[in-house]
Length: 112
Ligand code: AMP
Ligand code: ZN
Picture 1 (spheres, rainbow, N blue to C red):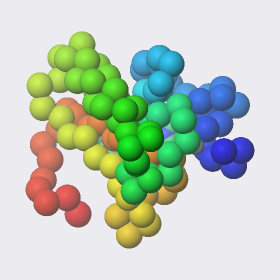
Picture 2: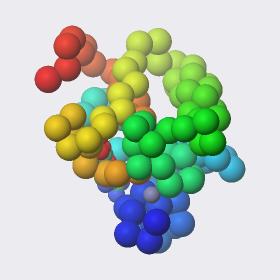
Picture 3: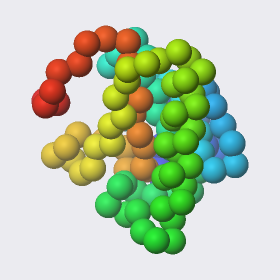
């Protein structure tokens, strides 16, 4: 999508602090980190949020979770949180599917 921030990052039109990339997804550090480790993993295909996942596009989600498991293992992260906000009330500000990976500090439950 031409007006999507994360599609522009995937296209290289906006720089990012890349953590990992393959044919299906990109991981990069969050520009406004909420924990000592805070990166985002996004599909290269534009999907607006979890609510737009379907039988046709869901395979990339399994792939992203495999990537998250590999990256956190490589980084030696034994405890971390994976979060996806869906809709404005839940705090979604970028409408391209992304999974936050947060680690390195104590976390509260339930989230605020
Ligand atoms: P959400 O608010 O759940 O939609 O998450 C969007 C995330 O994208 C926020 O944590 C932002 O800090 C992050 N973000 C926004 N712009 C950029 C950018 N140019 N590079 C990296 N992260 C970004
Ligand atoms: Zn997009």
